[in-house]
Image 1: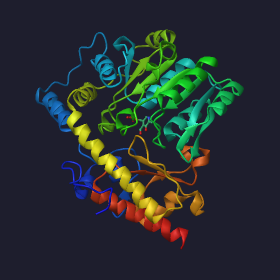
Image 2: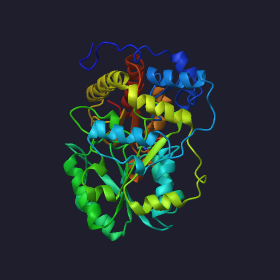
Image 3: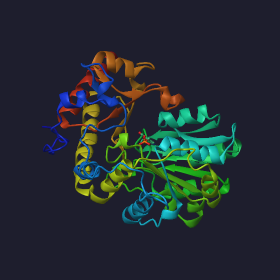
Image 4: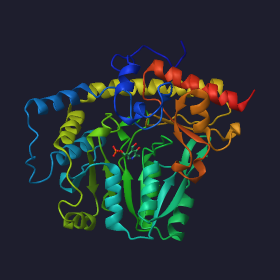
Length: 398
Ligand SMILES: Cc1ncc(COP(=O)(O)O)c(C=O)c1O
């Protein structure tokens, strides 16, 4: 047994492939039956028991009536508690508004804060729907390339400063922890970004959805918690969906730092953006209130898996570049040193029977990259890694 393997964790390593494939959700449903999925950012693990119990309780009460939330959903206070407990950030429940998902949050904030043609800085590579959103909304994406250094992925602060100045950016979309590289920016790095944001009067839209998937000793720092000045220019987006595997609940929160934006938000027609489902609120509250034991096991499993991915890639394909993620269950793999061209996802699907994400939907320089989702059991991960390495070794030649 390898260094990165360890004891199986019940509830996480006993996944039944037939059960996974029979579910209608997209990760296992879309690929052909002989293909293993390691693509979309959903985990294979069952929903935390605390969330199942809370949802069952609601159904058992036969209570699916209109919620009584005259002052907003209970999510507002739940978010403020969560931020205080985990990060010592005194977020204000009064500044929280609910949306169905983070892409909707992003679109709403861009709609309220920018016009067509305005420049928006965004790290590249990035979560594809965010890049697509900028394009479909007619905002000018100003790429802030993450730099691959021997120490890992870094932001070039001088380049960021110049880019936002030259393009007259109004907004910086910051994804931290970062999808797809898994980088968790340190307090010092975030302070550099905050200084640039202040210098150019940027609104910072900080997506922190992967924060609770941070591996020790790395630590997530909410951007808005840096200083009162940073708080006033930051809109924070998050949800429980990534860390607790609840993508289907469609429930996210936005914390508004800027007073003006919050006022604008509240001036919108009340039903224009729809309302979230009470089931999403029940699930999120249960995850945040009672999910700690499940989350501890989850991080043990994910940490083991991320080490295993590095171990196998280093042993079998040492020419590949892949920095172990500091957060997330996604490994961002650069196949350029193998000289395979720009369609490695297709090669891995065809020759290895594994469906991965990657390529230019993550940004212009991402053509030769693969994103591997390792949130699965030890046994399934071994088969995924066998398929990927087989496909890339065959293509790379001796
Ligand atoms: C960085 C980032 N933001 C937002 C989302 C969207 O999450 P949701 O659909 O739960 O809103 C994802 C999903 O993978 C993500 O990785």
